Image (tube, rainbow, N blue to C red; front, top):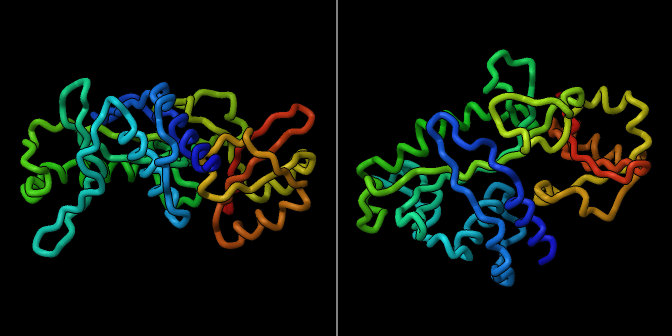
Amino acid sequence: MNNLKNQFLGFLNTPLLFERLHNLSQIKLDINEIENFDFTKLNITDNLPLGKRIERFFQFYIEQSSNYELIKSNIQIIHDKETLGELDFLLYDKMAKKYLHIEHIYKFYLYDESFSDEIERFIGPNQNDSFSKKLEKLKNKQLPLLFKKETQNYLENIDISAIEQKVCFKGNIYVPIDLIDKEIPILNNSCIRGFYINREEFFKQKKFREFQYFLPSRDDWIIDCNTNKIWKTFDKVIDEIELFLNHKKSPLVWLKNRKENRCESLFVTWW
């Protein structure tokens, strides 16, 4: 339970990637509410992918919150045996007295300066995901799904025009090591969690041999690395890192500087 709670707190403490962008507005969660949460009701199966796991954390927050009522979640819109898409969450905001359609997103992005377009610079650790693609999918597919005539049958007689659309778009940004103390445009700089470095540079620079390391499981990527108690030397962790890189996977690595007694989070990229 402690690890599950730490994962939930990691999710909740992750900043929003932006306040408002391209007409997308964010739902804001009040962290002070958790003082009254019943964490014995936080039950999640071990085999859930990280994205689905974090969706469950959001749902747990909504179910425990005094500000919202969960109407439905993961609403699959099916017409003539064809799945048109899925609405993540339908909520009732008790304070604003309105219905909300929420699309939930939680991402890890690397800031790659090789792209000329600023939006395009935020990519996934394995280059198979990007912020720009997610924005496009939200604007052109996920949010418009609410207004399809087939969707009305799934909304329990709620008038679509009375539903406000928002996103819960949280994320972690990793920048090149030389940008770690510099501002980047467009997205919330509070989301900068660490740096990334390619395998060649990581293995070549002698300073990295002086630190201690730990490779968290993917479920623990959202946890604060300062909570970790188990550390390994460079020589003992290198095989683990190589295993990921050889399969074209960029591992998330926690690094501990023993001299300064501080922890850092980084990606070692295969590309």
